[in-house]
Length: 98
Image 1 (cartoon, rainbow, N blue to C red):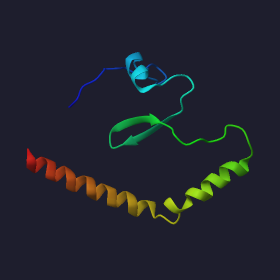
Image 2 (image 1 turned 90 degrees about the horizontal axis):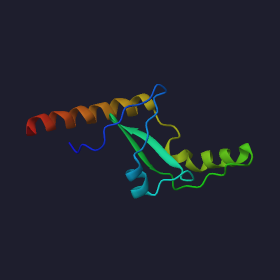
Image 3 (image 1 turned 135 degrees about the vertical axis):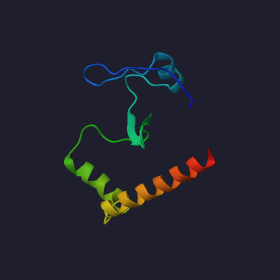
Image 4 (image 1 turned 120 degrees about the horizontal axis):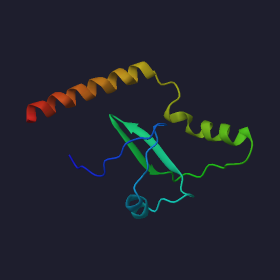
């Protein structure tokens, strides 16, 4: 395990990205970040797509329409079950490797 900097959330659950990491990644007050969860980890990456901060609801509806193919009609329970099966299979392989 690659151990970096140990941080403890404050009473609101917030954590601070250490200055050396912010500088290395070019994160400042104007950078948008995408925060996502993968497994038991939190991943923070630069948000590269530009979404207008002003405008009408129509702009956001258009963005949703353009991305609908990636999720439209998905059976979320089936997707979640399949993901769990894959994770269990990988976990068993990992245990065998040890």
